[in-house]
Image (cartoon, rainbow, N blue to C red):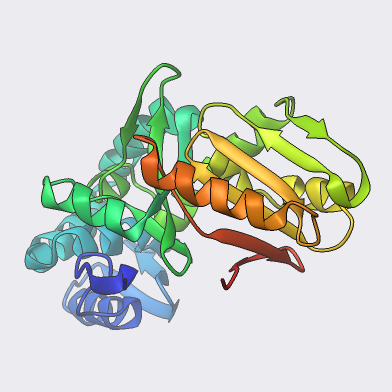
Length: 271
């Protein structure tokens, strides 16, 4: 399934075109002198003062609602001339939730199911049918982050994902997992809330790779279970079959296929 089928994630106008349109509009503003621009960053002189304008959050707002292109640009120009009050307010909102921002894995079908209920989720493709959504992790419960939240926080989606992974790394530092067997028979088991998301952590992949002989394979049958074992494990076929069955039959089911870790990257393991 194509993760890019949501037109709100892949807007009709590229970041470069958006920046060019904003630049063209600024040329009509007498108090603004355009000095240079690169990507979504503009070097300007506003009312005689040098400033660097970042268009990221306005571009994200446009992506979430392409019909609001002109109001979004007008808001940027207004904030540029009248100060960054709105941006500071947005950053305060982000500061309020940034410590509980986390990634959560989901399949393309789960994403489509959420979309059909009206949830417009922030999702990034990880490997083929597997993606990572953003959530607000409140411990006993969590809330999916929707597209509209990113521009409202005054950040871009890359920043949101970076913060989510930093939080996951921090909370995983002392996370316990079991090690069963030795050598090629080693089986690693992380059975905890949102354990599957730790497959996104390079530190976890490196640690587990060092504990098995040969190539590391991951199983994530549910959101709360992450398994690691060698591709040469003597019970490989049995483990594969059990993971597929658990994924299909669990109410918290995730991925029935296995993931191969190769040079720190995740690949879908062919049957």
